[in-house]
Length: 472
Ligand code: NAD
Image (tube, rainbow, N blue to C red; front, side, top):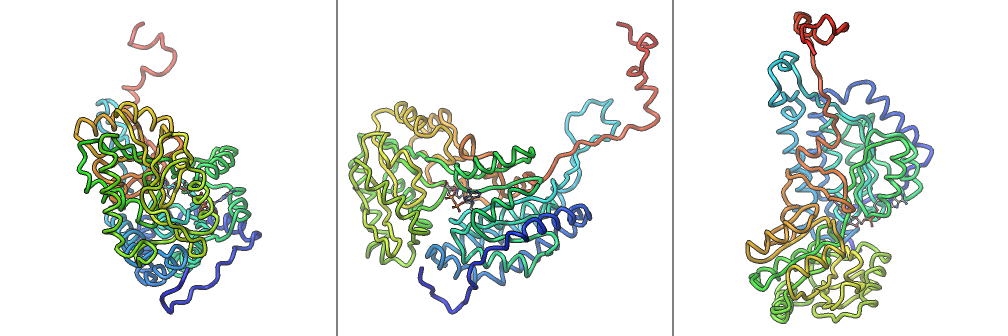
């Protein structure tokens, strides 16, 4: 993608493979040294990260322009600004999260044991990120690892190489090099990292790689947090406010050119309002892009040719009809926000996760049938959207599960910096953001302390039981 500023970003270079075991060993010994356990140390690292994000904001904006043609507006709002907010929120709350927790509802006799939950860092961890929000989805898990007291290796996606270079600069310049490292590279480097022992692997990306990671982690019983994707449904009832629904759904597909794990893959629309919905959608498209999406300075590009070709194939294979957008240009990696009206759930547009600006519209005759179809397409999507009356929205939420859900919007549930974010079933395991990020890298260790004077009371537990005052 074209560059806009005079900011220079060094070329992407893979970390030498033979350095990877050394980095892992360094992180394990740093954890053993106990220094990352000190809450003040963690706060210092987070403050440094905060200043680093501020210092490097322009460089990140430029790197994301290069990687995804992401607009500065989106890069500030959803990437660097988001990570800064997460950092500040964590700084404000860390001491409270890290403090011992007193359990509720402990029986009186046990309360004398001073029962408490200590928050222990898991140890040296590995974070593997993806390309679509290359700052947010790498830095936010890193904030969780720092907050919990875990040394961390971050492996950004090679799909966003310029941002991976700036992430390396951020970590090297601002954080403790004994505890935090960025490893850049491709599949061999990630494989070398997976050959090392970690106390947690935090992975964001697709289902197929998640299976490789899970299998590898299972060999050493390493816990994983998996932030994956899905074929997210949206439901539009005949009672929905159509201009509002169209605007919000189109927003969901235009941000980052729809390369969002939460964006709708299939919109299930009541057949009674189908024509109106399509008409309003098209009108909204013209409002967003008066000169067409290609000319818009706000609209991002598909990350690379491989993903362009993948989506083009979905469009070529569809038996549906394009009712909005449709233009593509491989040289410019441009795919217009495109809606395809399909009449079967078997269509290529429905069966694959587009992870881009293309989506399908599938009409329904009853909400029950739409819910059945949606569950067959993907029983556990990452997100779900419902636009209708309260009873309809309640029915959708009650019938179908998903990682998160937005009523009357595309994915605002994923826009709150301190709400847990994660999938269910094939869309992921575990959650993060805010306190959930701290928790995902922590072990909740129950501790009790039995006073000596209690032995009289505890004598009932000692053999021989025939001496016990408690008769059978
Ligand atoms: P990707 O190509 O960036 O790959 C993700 C990571 O896996 C990269 O760091 C890459 O280096 C690594 N990787 C690739 N092949 C590997 C292999 N063979 N062994 C080990 N590591 C390997 O991204 P992707 O997988 O195309 O990501 C897109 C998917 O991610 C979509 O399904 C999307 O829904 C999902 N996603 C989920 C979230 C979330 O937060 N839940 C966010 C963004 C994207």
